[in-house]
Length: 116
Image (tube, rainbow, N blue to C red):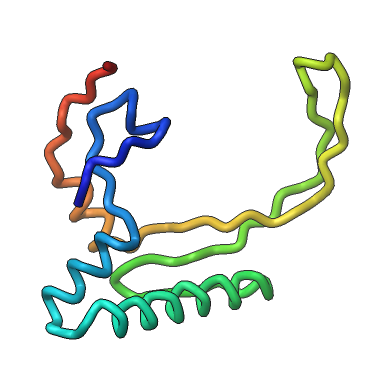
């Protein structure tokens, strides 16, 4: 894990794990090279994205569920232009953590977040 100098992380003292960090961690744990792990990770994410783009949910027992949530059409306001905008019905991706995942995160001690 590394500290990234993104716009979001600049204001808070966050440690952010990137895809490259995750691939390195998996390579160390499994003994496989980073290239192989990268191909597997890309295929995994592509599979999830592909199924969700067809409107199918992806359930990973013990981890969580990637769910397609429908949103109704609505009239929204653009406050800068003071106009109304029509937002058509659409779907958004969502993640619902599994019980074990939720419990693991629930038990983490919260680090005090300070604004710099």
